[in-house]
Image (tube, rainbow, N blue to C red; front, side, top):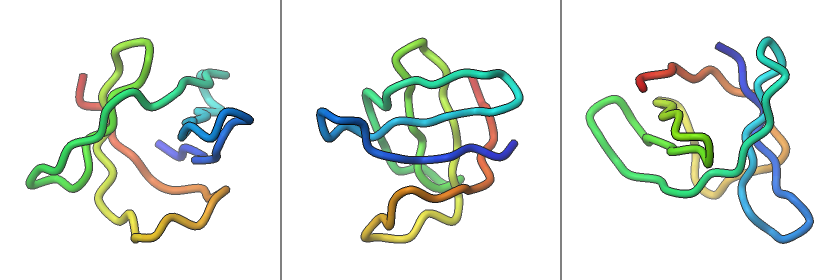
Length: 67
């Protein structure tokens, strides 16, 4: 699914999923074989495989929901 990454006014990373009209803050990020796993404030986990460092925000990327 397509997601948009941006920073909120407090400087935290936020994920917006247009198809679900969902905007949640990223509370944890870990590395795995699938790439970065981002845990959202609502408990969802998204696998993002092609995330480049340093982040250039805002940007739209492809992510996979794993939990």
